Image (tube, rainbow, N blue to C red; front, side, top):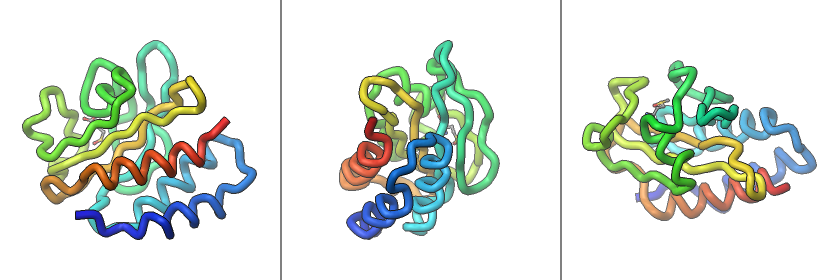
Amino acid sequence: MSRVDYPALAARCAALTEGEQDIIALMATLACEIHHSDARFDWTGFYRNVGGDLLKIGPYQGGHGCLVIPFSRGVCGAAARTGQVQLVADVDAFPGHIACASSTRSEIVLPVWQGDALLGVLDIDSNQPAAFDETDAAALAAILQASFAP
Ligand code: SME
């Protein structure tokens, strides 16, 4: 299923962000690079952990997203709450899915860590059903880990 050239994407992200520590600068660069790496990715962006069990929208590519998501809601909230990657093949079958775009059919959300601190989540939405798999999850998690290492 995966069509991204993940080694090339990881190398590009590493080269572009080398030496950068600013979280927003990192998120903005990764959102751009990841979004344009594969036609399956129709919305790519970060929600930031702002405390109080709330996520607020961060850098993204695609149409507008919801501004605030509580940890208790949606796929993004589930990733933040559990610290686990969420692979959702059919968003209509996910209880509490938040539909920012009615065209979205499937979604992957990964927690973003800096050491033990949860910085937020990376959310990628696709207009194709079951667009994401474990290969995407593993490769994206590795890119996030390398980019946000303390
Ligand atoms: N679908 C997400 C909300 C974020 S947007 O789709 C950009 C969710 O259920 O958490």
